Length: 433
Image (cartoon, rainbow, N blue to C red; front, top):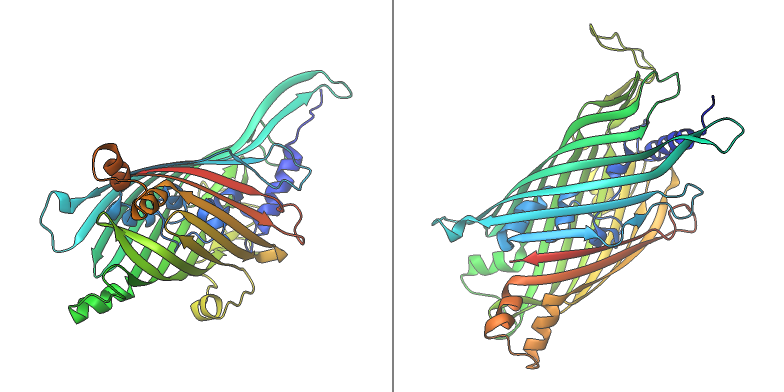
């Protein structure tokens, strides 16, 4: 009896995706797909772009620390799920993400010298490969079916501190579940199923330059009694997918351990509506570099007692890998194993968002991005500022002060890498403050 499986094509796809991002082949390459829809509109920026979208904690758990300083609850989900590599012949590939974040401002309950928040969150990244069948050779008689997928469930913890400058620190514990088929080719000698733990760590530092200057002058810097200038510098770092190896039978491959380092600046005008801060107009520019910290080796290693000799030895590198902050983040140079992302965003009245960016990756991966966003809370602030709507009492005051509904989209465009061309992301985010 023969088998008619899509597993071989699937394995080829995995190897191609893994080798495109690092020095050696890695398993579960879905873990390094940028998931933030806002960030994807700016070339894939994720580690340093501060947002209250719960999905952002997947890329940098320090986002949860920032989130808790100003927000109570956020629920985000792709709507609809993303069709992955729409230009390929591999059908039914899709990516879906859901996330929930909750924050607690300790200053509400304790007298503290600085604003401090705690946060906890849950998120899931689900990569669907579709349904595959086995059949009797030379017939259409199906003997069995299986559904192939990769997923990662994340529990996130974060702390935020606001004292002149803002600092967010976060940690993700993730449980990776890979199910690529009921059995594997004989050379792998076991089921194509694996489960393995891993973790992420991240930090974000934001310097509100105008506020810092006002603090030391003991006098607010303002253009007039209604409008103030805004200038923020933000730096982000994340270490992702830190763990051991993932094994399918006797075949073992490394996880795509990844370092990310980025920065951005935001300039604009700041006002207030009903004592709520309101960004009238801002421009954000960002750049970020990532490196998969995996090195392959042709030197056979001596296995420890009870261990297995693997056909493809590998090693993990530490720290930032080959990332060079000045070359990559200031001068915009990319080389070797470095993936470089850059992008910008213009926002109007916290209501409309316009984004552009580009991604230059290992192996010639190159594409441009654009995205848009809408926030209901900013629209309500605009109506209130124009006198069209009075939010002083009842539900109006609650929606203005405590609720926001956000919708974001982004798209990849590439003439060089047609497989990724036309990939679209969209998400809905509900926020309670």
